[in-house]
Image (cartoon, rainbow, N blue to C red; front, side, top):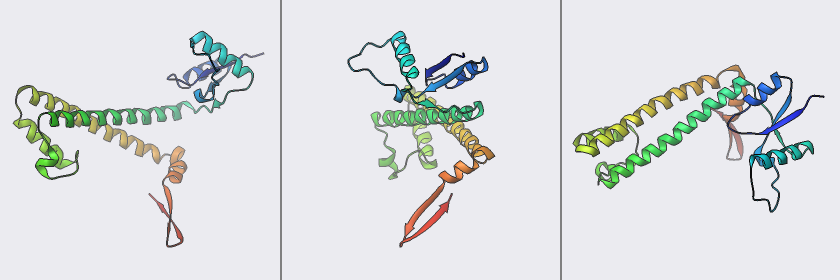
Length: 193
């Protein structure tokens, strides 16, 4: 009899599952949200969690996750990495704006413009940085260089995502997700992106 194994979905993704299945084991990945929590048990250790997981799995109390193939998992990793970089970009932008404000530099007030991070704003940033002195100029220059580098990398990620979207594997799902129906004057109209 082949042992049946499971583990909680984590940072290792489905690589452990694929490795175990290649060695002849039956292995499933469990959704963390499906693992029951015992009332009154606040102590958590790997040993206790493993024993609970084994008991719940043996009794059919867990929801398993459908494993994608390695290529789909890599595509998802690409999207996750892009998302992570987008969060870092947002944090860096907020940091730059805060640094500017602390030093009395206000783009919206000076230029009477309401949008940041467009061509005009970048131009204002470069002119403003050039007029700063010492550590502030150095700090803002380095931060702006980092932000521009992030912008370039995110553009490259965007190109990769666009290329993935038109592959045969994703054409239908993308088409389904980019189809919008709206009701105008009692009639339904469908638009494709």
